[in-house]
Length: 118
Image (tube, rainbow, N blue to C red):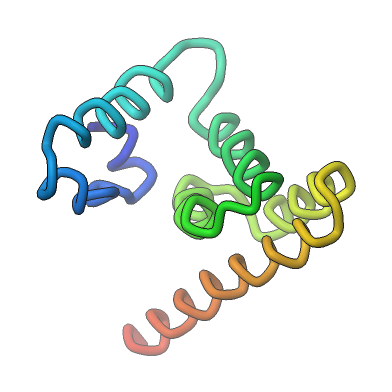
């Protein structure tokens, strides 16, 4: 799917595809093939909305993978931090703390990859 390629997530949820292909097609295929492809919102806007929802709901896996996708499509560090602050005031300070921990993990992983590539 083109959207997954743009987000750098071609291999997203492959465990579902191996375990039960129908589940993968229904979840990933529908979500990224239909929902993310709808008109009126850009991929960038959808990513910001998705990160906000994951932060508010304290979903570690979703938050982690969407931070990485956000960076891939050009959402800046400053925008991600501002999103965390904004959502945290609606979802509560524990949501901010949780979101920052998840984001720090992504930053550390990325820094480790950059060191290996240097």
